[in-house]
Structures are given as C-alpha cells and as structure tokens.
Image (cartoon, rainbow, N blue to C red; front, side, top):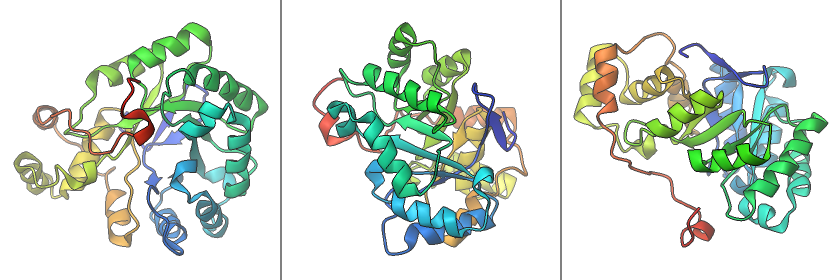
Amino acid sequence: MTGTSALLNTRHQMPMLGLGVYKATGEGEVEAAISTAVSCGYRLIDTASVYTNEDGVGRGIARCGIPREELFITTKIWNNAQRLGDVQGAFSRSLERLKVDYVDLYLVHWPVPGCYLSTWKEMEAIYASGRAKAIGVSNFEPRHLEELAAVSDIVPAVNQIEFHPYYYQKETLEYCKSKGIQVQAYAPLARGAYLDNDIICVLSMKYQKTPAQIGLRWSLQKGVAVIPKSTREDRIASNGEIFDFEIEAADMELIDGLNQNFRSASIPEDLRDIPF
C-alpha cells in the first residue's frame, strides 16, 4: 500500500497520512495545527481522551472549512474508563467534547489486563450503533489480538502501534496483514531519534528528501499509515510531502536493518509494573 488511503475491513477508506495531536494542549495550539494540516491536504486527525484536547480538536474541525464527511476523526478510550466499565460513558463524553455525531475510528488505547475483552464487547455495541464507523485497538500484540478473536467475530479495523525504523515491529505487522487489520504508526519519527542516523542521512541526500520524509515514506511502503505529531507549520507541511517519491527495494532493506526495538513513547504508569 503506497497510495494516499487504505481500504479498511469495514469497507471505509482511511487516509494513510494523518495529524497526531498528542501533547497539543496550549492555547489555540491544536486548532492552529488542524488549520495548517487541512490546508496541506491532511484529512485525518488523531486524538484521544487522555490527550485532554478533544475540545480543541472539536473547535479545530468545526473551523477548518472542510465538511465533516470529508474528515476522518479518531479518538481512543483510556485505561481508567476500561477499569470502571464506563466504555459507553467515555465514548459519549468524547463525542460531546469533539462536537460530532460520530467518529470514523474508535480505539482501545491499551490492552488493560482483565478489561480489554469486555471493553471490546462494548466497542462492538458502539460500532453497531453507527456512532463509530470503525473500531480498533492500539498497542496490541498478536497474542492480544488472538484473545480478541476467540471471543469476537469483529476483527479490529486498525491496530495503532509505535512503528518506525528503530522499532520495526515486523511480527505484529505481518500478523495484522494476515488478518486484514490495518497498521497505523504513532510516533513514526521516534521523537527524532533516528533523524541523524548515517544511513537515513545518506538516503536523504540521495532522494533529496528530509530524514523525516525518508522515515515516513519507509512506513508507507511497508503498508503502514502514519500520524506524525507536530504543531509547527513547516513540519506539518513537510511531513505531508511523502507521496511523490519511492524508496528503492535495496534502500528499504537498509532501513529495515536499523531496527533496535527502540520504544520512544512511554508505557503508561498504570501498566508499567504489570504484564500486559
């Protein structure tokens, strides 16, 4: 998949590029980022209840000048709501903050032990109601997905995981592809960790693209959608310029070899001391 959108197992199209808004909580920050992003052609906005900016996202999408039906809005249920069994309530509050009647994708943010199977059953009801056009998961490994499959006939449309040249989750990617689950990469730039890598920099010169564009394009050519986070106009624009070139197969293999199983994003405190 190297096009601009992916066909989900729900038969809905999801853009392969989106704007991540994690930590965009300053005054007017997320609204400005959304305005810039849509002007650069972005149509997917990814947020979560734990980001505490769904209100701002709602204002941003209302003001951006793009019809709602042309946007793809994703949000996620946080761990405490799963533990409380408040899936329906959490989802309704997200819709209220976003000021929308539906989201295009609703995700289980983390596989909270003892909770995520029952959470998924509630997600199924949300999906059936039409208030979420697709449901999926985040940070799930194949073992978690196998457990879901044992209790549900609804296959997650998306598995959002950390994925970049330093964290090439090949096993999870191949499993998801075999099950018709679209992988989407959060932190696809690894918080900048690989942008000064020698191989990435050489390829940057070869293709006349920035190191960030090389990393994002590598993910796209793996069939992985990307949601780089930025609030800077220049970087939002630059991150979107990844559909006009292709990395050669030999160079893709060079980037594959950079994997360090390096996680740039942190595991939530409430999950650090327990296996999930």
